[in-house]
Figure 1 (spheres, rainbow, N blue to C red):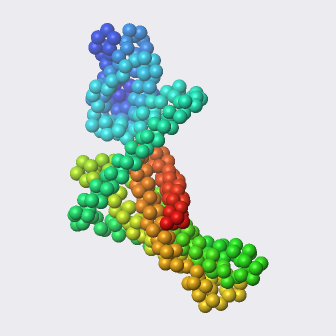
Figure 2: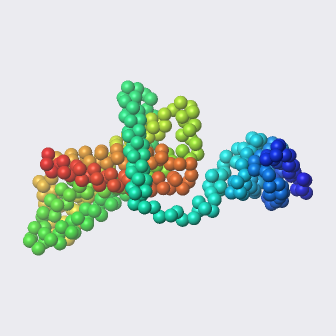
Figure 3: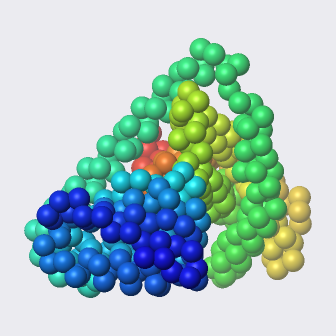
Length: 379
């Protein structure tokens, strides 16, 4: 049947239970509604038909409205028990159709209804399976990182040093202002809080001890790591996830590049490199924040404050903080890259995995910090 806008729908019965629709011409917003009506009218008129085929080889133009009609007809046929097949498709229409998330468009109304409440056993089983799958992903990713690192040690020239220095700039140099500002504020806060109690005993000078030790051993590395997790961890997950959605990672694999070596390793090494330096900056700025409070609020001279700080802290205080910063940076960059590779092919998944990268990174930071604290306390 021809319509006035230039499309043609022709029905050809293949056998008793099968029909084929030959659609030609243009299927656009001007005639898509009429095309849909013609197809559904012909299908429902013959109750013996249960297999419907579409031959779109003659279609010259199909816009988003035409794609919507095709998806809507497919959904209608499947909901009413018909088998649906496309036997011929022009290359232009095929490329356009690949851009459409047909799976989400074909979700039935039943699937959109709230799911029934699960019992405790089902919930425990699902959580266990998810945990096992997560463990498998982590172990696989760690293995690939180790292999990539071993290959880099054997062949240093294969390292993309331009990318490495770019990530050093993004994760390190660009983070200096926010790290310095927050460390300064943390030093101020710690000094004020300590002064409230120590002033009662005339021990204002010991504010320098508390601020220096707490900043170098604990707050400096921890605060810096949280900033790196919020900036670089999220950035790594979003960048790699977006590349996966746009099929750039598939293209790298097709060209023979290993995605982990090409994308993850430079980011992890860059974060590991800048972590201790950012921590050092945070330590010195945090101590300076305490000095400001000591001079203004506690009437301490800069010389007395710095001498007391120098007397209180030890090399181990600084060293333990730097060791923590290296471990924190590896965890943050690693989980950020892992979450990026776990992204599915949708923008929604990029957002979820980016959020997960930050949350997981902060959790791992605090967990690792607790382990380091116990180790340093006893050993």
